[in-house]
Image 1 (cartoon, rainbow, N blue to C red):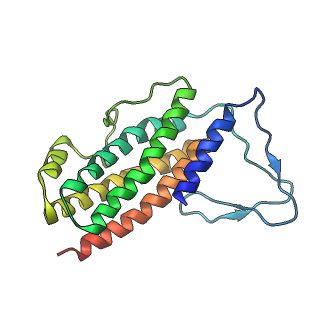
Image 2: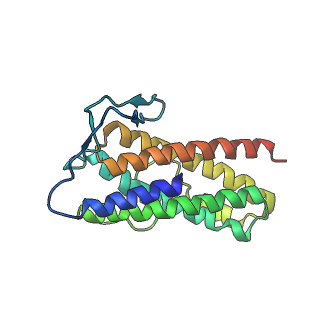
Image 3: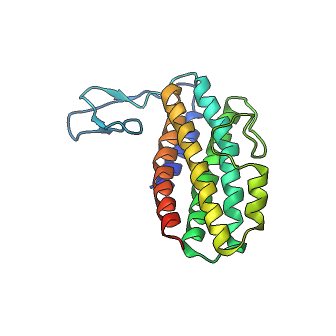
Length: 211
């Protein structure tokens, strides 16, 4: 599902740059029902006949831009932490989490970078968080400790730091969904919220079950 979403986002990005006219939303017919997903924690609804979906606002909001500019370095730090796993643990479940994070977050960085470039904004470099706190970013001291850890000590530290990191991503996604309007960034925020919520639950269980 995450790979399918990335394909959808990339396709939307390409189509958004084609032609001089804005794409016109399609009207919902009366044949099969169309389900419109809600925000995290909200229930989905069924589109009404004649309702037009898919209209993209002409101007993204500040919340859209903050989300992309904050999530890119946030993802980069997750990739850095995940990249340490291969040489520091042999635990299959931890290696699986690290691989999944790399598979999902690297394409998301590419999508958000392309989106920012299309707005004429600079893509953030490194994995600093622009002075913002409260988003689960690991400190340099924590990263140094993670790099020095091995085996079960690495597993526990990795899971603890990544759970906190994911919780910060959920907060960022909620802020985007509360104030953002851009269709691609809202779709990205929903995916981040859904995917990382599942990963948090699994990592917490693994942490509880670890010796």
